[in-house]
Image (cartoon, rainbow, N blue to C red):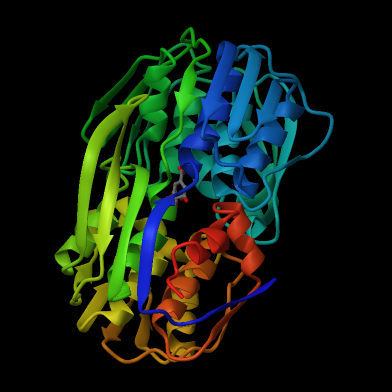
Length: 428
Ligand code: S3P
């Protein structure tokens, strides 16, 4: 699918973004591990979370879907059954890595695979700790790439010092830890998103957090719950970025998750001069939520690096677009993890901004954008990566001429109605 974006001077209206992708995955997975019925409202029906649902169904758990709502009915963590076929995680790293943790604890054989992009992404980071806990896992390229063949079974609790600040690695080990008789601890080099910890507590597990150290007690009695998923701040960020970079923009973005492990981009944008205010703060199922008001702003460059990176890792493509439209230089560093996302997002960002006429250069762990040049509309590639396609659309709103995004259908991964939502706020 090819989508053309034209420049605009005004954006107006209210935006509601779909449910949080990370939380939607976890709600279905924990629903499958809990005894009884879990009802999930405002679930993200994006391709990634649908992959999780299909895998959970293939393990013998009942999952019913209605408009915006999912019901999971399970006999608990010991009721999962050996799947008859390979389990396809599609484009979803969260599905593959978290399910590798769950399947390691299940006394049967399973194979996890994914699409071309996912089969190139590093899996050694979960295979290593899960193997150390007692799972037998074999994979391509010296046990580093999917497909993963998993013989799960009796696991031992362990203390794992993770070399990467990754919520997927932390969560895989914690989920495997549920199947052990002891206490499993993960220590991270920097704090990553903590949705697994919050939701496990909500389902009744004992979880203790001490700085970058998280412990989970095995064999808890998890029981089905009602969950309402907050709007995804990573999806909201495209509208926040559009709202601050289009001069005459006035947007209200409603029901956005503002978990502090996810709000790094808000802090950076405020530091760049963005007019963003938070209203009506509340808490839903242990997750903080707010409504946001965003106005066209005068922006200046900044430095993005260090401990804040895991708190904004998914927002870097759109932050790069904001940087190109800001005055002065923005440096992104310590972000080599971007090379292991749905695309190599360092190279992809540099190519996208380069195609639009921005002044940008690549480094091994980030890039430098010298902002303030007028962007020129051009044909752009999505790199098969949902967040790159949406970042290109935000850039197109401020570029001279028309911007065409090839392969734009990949937005389905996290935000199926993205282009309709965008059309709804453009003042023509
Ligand atoms: C996610 C964790 C992050 C993030 C991804 C979703 C999760 O990945 O980039 O989009 O749901 O746990 P890493 O764990 O690889 O940092």
